Length: 136
Image 1 (tube, one colour):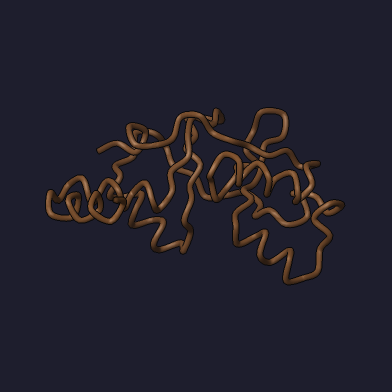
Image 2 (cartoon, helix red, strand yellow):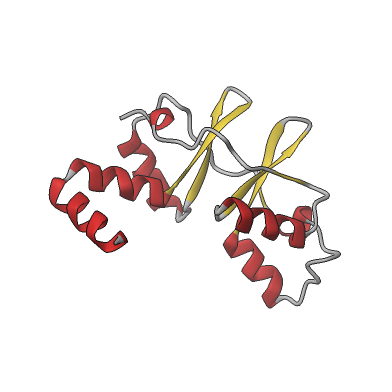
């Protein structure tokens, strides 16, 4: 399956000047664990739960410290035409749990390891039945 068919199309993003508190609130409200960071319409970084945990561990004040100070610069990305199995392998190799999906320079989606686990469950009827049972 092409990764573009699996990705979340409505992507929540953060700006460089957003405070960590604003970003964390947005992540909580949208129920996401990563925000691509955009500047002038281009993805320049990504802020993840890990980045927020690092900020907290370093004593950053979430009301005054900005996303720019704790985001990961130049995130790894995927193309919507890439095969999902290739994207999974790359994410595992890189040790990342989120990849923004770019069509050229345009942010068109984001994929998470959770999305890829769901895809794997859908490929296996037994796993899908187990996943549905656990949600009940």
